Length: 410
Image (cartoon, rainbow, N blue to C red):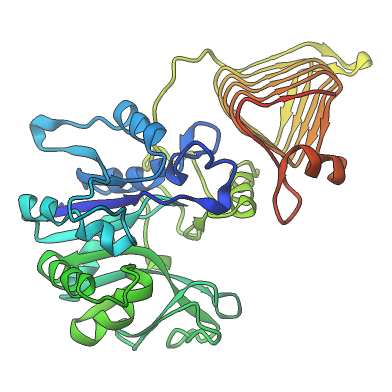
């Protein structure tokens, strides 16, 4: 699309999502029943017509690279690709020192591709964005850099990078996590939050990365180090994400963007999906969220013995392929593939990942089960905070997270 190379940053540790990131990078964490977090940015890009994509990986990248190779094979004959690029230490014995350094250490890719624009996007947020509109805005404004900006309530915005703009959307200030966020002209109750997604003119990107690399005091991060000064030397504009239009979405549908960087935000974003009228809609056929299609059988719900309390059903929930509700009940939950919930068991307000087995009479409530967890008969999780804290990792807001492959006895 208009001679653009995309660099997706997918090397983050995701420490605040532990233990979901114990064995995988944050962008590889399962989400929404059948997806990985990285599927959302890649779907946005390909739906928008961008097919030259490099995914920069680093920590615990095995499952992420495997997912990319299986789910995201494009057409090399047409020069379409989504290539994983592991950290290679090309500039010395060091990992990526920050988001800007990750691009700088792969400057050779930009030099080889010789694009006019470089889009730098994060691989660890859940959202929909028509990125073609962002690029057209960038070109119309004759910007050197465009920052994607999310209008956020001003009183809650101090934990983000804040963009200050004039009436033409030109950036005139940038502060990382300020105590007093600046308002948007004409909408003073809101502030522009940086989404961590950028479009650069390639020559400008090369210049600013070189300048940053030479600064010994820099942490080599786009938000902390480059954005606070680049607008002083180049025309930088903020693209208002609230104006973004997704084909197939109702005009009344508000744009959705979530940084699923903590257990609580990850849990809440999954719960957003299973509402009757979800704030984030997975069912728009004009803007599909793409992923690997596993060869699973359809979901099955069996037994209808109301008198005995043995009734296979799922209410206000997402149930993926291969699941079996065998005389059990699921409320307000998200179930990934091949989950077996045995008779008389109850699953409530929970996220259950691939291959979990929940035994007879077991009960779980407001819990996250990682892959292949086996919950034994009569076992309970989510009802006794002290017992949960003794056995599992529990988030700040009291959500137990059961590690992959754990066997939970009564």
